[in-house]
Length: 493
Ligand code: SF4
Image (cartoon, rainbow, N blue to C red; front, top):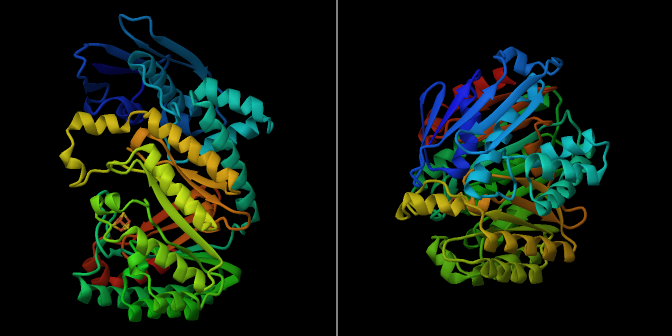
């Protein structure tokens, strides 16, 4: 099969949609995209604009010129056309391509043609365009973007909650992210830059030294310009994979150096239950209202073993009890749907066990199919099919959403990743007053985020402009260049 672009060069946008249906795609010429399709059909999809439109015109939201966008598959009766303004062309081309391929293959994704990572933004925009009429918004998303009714329901609910949280945040006060890219073992599906904390003891201490330096210098800069942080997130990796001494030094440096607004939220990922100790919990407790995350991912020992987590279910219970005994007022727990060897029923059984523990928030992730040694055991065809809509997993997700809401958890942030099982999403649920404002602010592109540590990203938001600065992912590079990186960050800020 091939796709021929007429009067436009939006091959990247079209390819994003093609990847939902096909594995092997080649952009060998600017105007043609080639697809290796196992059905062996030599079909041609034409994606056309009535006239050529410049990139500048497509960026100008004030330009109301009408352009006819049409797509068709030759020698079939599959065709679609719509008139749109230049700034809507890209979205329309993607929508039409999705429509034709969905009809051709019979594959319907739960999120329809929405391929981006933040569908709630589109849902909220539609909600405003439809004068906050829920019924019209739903109709719009179902008919125009082919989103399933269930997803429209959860997306709209989450989008409204996200907006309420964002409206209460102070746009001028940044968020702080501190990254610890180490874990006690590596999960089979991990695609982060995380490193082995057990075998890298000397690098670990050097890393903490460099990070403390970055925290001190950047915090000093913010004190000087008199700017406070409204939320701090210590993530990774697994921050509690550090030694007790290094971990305590990190907590104390944050407490002593970082200028915080009144009621500043702080969250610490104590992800792996086997890395949590009394001493580390006491170190976190210097922030009396700190949120912590204890992440079981599944409540089945067999699966934990299969995915290389290096801990068991009993350790999840022990870590949770220890944290409760330290009076943490807000504990989040993560679960993953679609782990290798698990069915929807297994996931729901894990969820039931977590609900009995009654943490303040629960985050549901869908297994992401990033390339890793673990996935290489699958054939390319099998790999592709794992991404296709999966009614069994989809229905388990819906049951989980219902069950969480019946237990007083409300969805408050939602995002999607590329290449996930069943085309599903990740959703954070929290009880009243326990939503993590960092999670919402960080996803929004409305609030600046200062990233410290190897692999972290600093994002400065000024009106509609967003600029990013990246710290190196390579650990040694980060350690060796720390002074230069600090100066570069101050200049950027
Ligand atoms: S806990 Fe997270 S960062 Fe660490 S190895 Fe597992 S997936 Fe990767």
